[in-house]
Length: 363
Image (tube, rainbow, N blue to C red; front, side):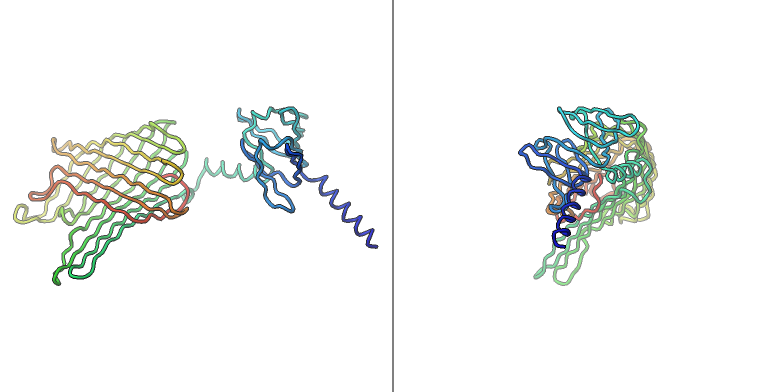
C-alpha cells in the first residue's frame, strides 16, 4: 500500500512538472513553475518551493512554457502562444497563425495571461482615468520655538496635491507662515500669511499645453486682506523625461487686491483691480534616487498700471529618508513693486522641516 501511495505521489509530481513552465540556466540548473513576466533585464518565475524568483536574463539559456505567454515587441506588436527558445530567438506556437519566430533582442516584455490582463487594465485606466485616480501629494512642515526669558513660535506649512495623466494635470497648492513672540508678557504676531490656488494644464500636443489658474493670497503685514488672480495661457514642455520636466509658459490674468487701512498713509480701505501679463518657468527634477528639486518663477508685469509688477519665486529641495518621509528645505520670495506706502516690497521665507508624501505620481 505504501509503494502504491509513493508511486502515486511521483506520478503527480511528474504530471505537475510536465504542465509547468521551465527555465534553464547557463550553469545547468533548472527552475520549474509559472513564468509571470519579464523585462529586458530580469525574468520572474513563481515556483512551488522557492516562491517568486527573479532571474537575470544573462543567466538564462532557455525557457519552455506550458501556458501561453504574451510577447511585446519593439514595433508595438504582441505575439501570444506557448514559447520555447532556440538560437537567440523565441519560437512561439500561436493559436491563429501557427509557429512564429521573434529574435530575443526585439522582445521588450513577456507576460502571462494574468499579468497581461493587469497591464491592459492599467493602460485602459491611463487612457480613461476617473477623477479620483492618480493623485499624489506632499505636505511640508517647519517648526521652531523658544521658551525662557523670551517665548517665540514660528510655523510654516506648504502642501500640494496633483493628478497627472498623459493628457492633463490638475494641481492644488497652499503655503502658510505664522510667527509669534512674547517678551515680558507682551505678545506680538510677527508673521501671518496664507497663499494657495488651483491650476489645470491640458496637453494639446506632445510639447504644447494650455493652462488656467486662480490664486488667492492673504498677508497681515502687507495689510492685504485678499489678492485673487484669475488667468491662463499657453505653455511648452522644453524637457519631459521620467526624471526631469522643465516647462515655460506665458499668458494673462485679471488681479483684484483688497487692502485694509495702513494709517496714517492710507487711513481707509484700498481696492486695486488690474490686468497683468504672466511669464514663467517651472522645473522638477530628481538629482538621484533620494534627492529631488522643484523650482518655479512667475513674473507679472502690470498692464493697467504700467511700470509696476510683482513676481513669485519658490524652490524646494527634498532628501528622502523613507518612502513617505523626507527632509526638505524651502525658499520663497514674493515681491510687489507697489505695496501700500510705508511697507516693504519683499517678503522672504526660508524654512526647513519634514515632508510627508502620498502617492507615486508627479507634481
